[in-house]
Image (cartoon, rainbow, N blue to C red; front, side):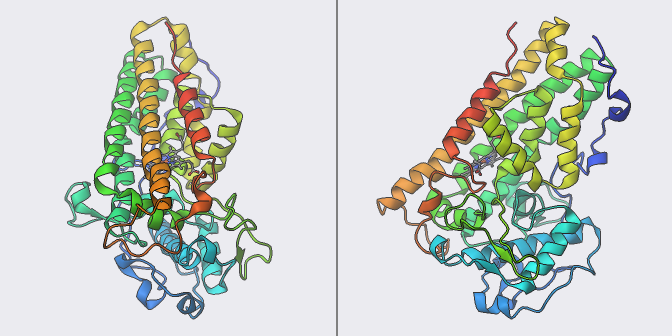
Length: 408
Ligand code: HEM
């Protein structure tokens, strides 16, 4: 096993804690603060798990908040979570045709300040929607869907709850795989083939478990509610024809600013796996995916970049002539390809088929989901909330993953 030498000093030992990645929770914020403590209060009707249903008028009357008193990662994430949900509720409550172009100063200024302190953009991202948005119903009990609730919601009732929590379960299923990354890199640097082999097997198992978790979307999320009620609230103001010029953050910038909406493309999990396995996507897909990294908490982005800097696992497996290692490596690539194939099936059901049904008038959301905000969001039919051209992008990413296989 040949060692690359280069970068070893900075990489060894490769630990998760250096990047605010948890051994138990992975990229999830461990034990987020509940909404009551240290939260900047929004409009009276908008607090707590019912979510921000503030009328636009009441948001204009909100007192000017300051981020100055907030301290610690948990308080800042909670503030970002609440301000991002209030912003999305404020903007999209009348649907894509009723979107406003200006975010009032009393929301825009604290949102900007908290975002600067966290190194996150001033918009709802995966880090808010999923990573920092969960609480146990009974403390001490396991992280299972029955024992979980989001801290804060938007319209969409049980389907919104399911969408957030199933995504959280995918993040949780990834944790052994994230730990395996650290083990694999350390083993690669220490020329320990046995540990490397075990780490790759663990990674393949974790990706398989992520696919199982992803399938639970079918049990918990109604496609009509997802398409007609939930999706618009995740939309951004970059590459979105409903807001072609972006959003003016009053008191922050007179020029409109453009940000992509929330998407699990901003989850660090697949970025990290791709980097470890040396998966190379097309230039167009890479440009989009790298832009999504700007929406990750900076320590998690640094984690992904550190994996990128490590000696090439792929090159090592190729040159090792070790059949066992090669098979384990290919199991990882194959599990990742399968995950992406399942994901494409989910996107087809929840966006393409749901859009066709909504157009044909057969896609009425079930009771309890709340009314759709305006007409179904037709402008985003072919685009993801992150702004990508959905199927061209997703299929290209899946196919280039498959090409990462090593032939014996
Ligand atoms: C109803 C469920 C879901 C829908 C409709 C959906 C939709 C999409 C769309 C449209 C994109 C394209 C990028 C964009 O512009 O946003 C995307 C990308 C992505 N989504 Fe999802 N998604 C769902 C659930 C999930 C879950 C639970 C995960 C797992 C954490 C996930 C992981 C990803 C990843 C990693 C990408 C980037 C492409 C890739 O690396 O393969 N998605 N998703």
